[in-house]
Amino acid sequence: MSKIFKIFILLLMTLAILPVAFAQNPFLDMIQDLSSIGIFDIFIFILFFITFYAILAKSKVLGDNVGLNGTIALIAAFLISIYSTFTSFSLVEPLSRFFTQLSVVLLLFIAAFIFASFFYPDLPKMLSEYIKGPIILYILIPLAIALLITSRSIWVLWAGFKVTPGSSTDIIILAVSLIIFVVILLVTVVVGGGGGKQ
Image (cartoon, rainbow, N blue to C red):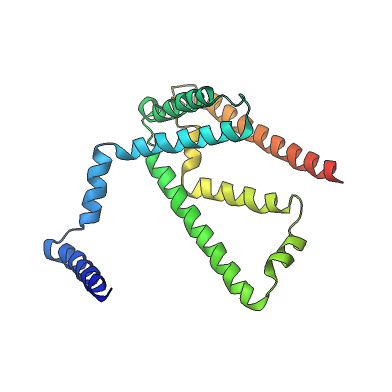
C-alpha cells in the first residue's frame, strides 16, 4: 500500500513540475486538441440523445417501443447537433458554463445543508414541513433562469434568427411574445396545480 502511495505522490510531483519546466499546461493543451477535433460536439450529441431517450422511455409518450424511442431521440439529438452549423453558435461554451455553475450551486447547497445539520439534527423533517407545494418551484425557477442568463445559455433561444435590415423589430416582438407566453404558461401551471391540491 505504501509503495502505491509513493508512486502516486511521485506522479503528482511530476505532473506539477512538468508545466513549470515547459512553461505550459499539458491539461490545457489536451483540452485544446480535443476541442480542435470536435470531441465536445460529440459529447453534446450524446448528452441530448441520452436526455431525450430517458424522457421518452420514462414518460412513455410514444409507448414502450424501444426502437421508436431511440429513433426519435437520435433524430432530435442530430437536429440539436447541426444547430451549431446553421447558426454559427456553438453550444459547447454555454453548456460548459451552465454545468459548471450548476455544480458550484449544488456544492454550496450541499455544504449549507451539512453545516445546518450540525445545528438542527432533524433538518430533513424540518425542511419537509416548511417547503411544501409550489414553494420549491418559487425557488428552483428563478435559480434556473439565473443560471441560464449567467451562463449565456439563454442566447441559444435567439441565436438562430438572422437579423436583416428591417427585421429587428419583428425579432424583438417575437422574443417578447415568447417570453410572455412562457410566463403565462408557468403561472397557469403553478396556480392550477396549487388549486387542484386544495
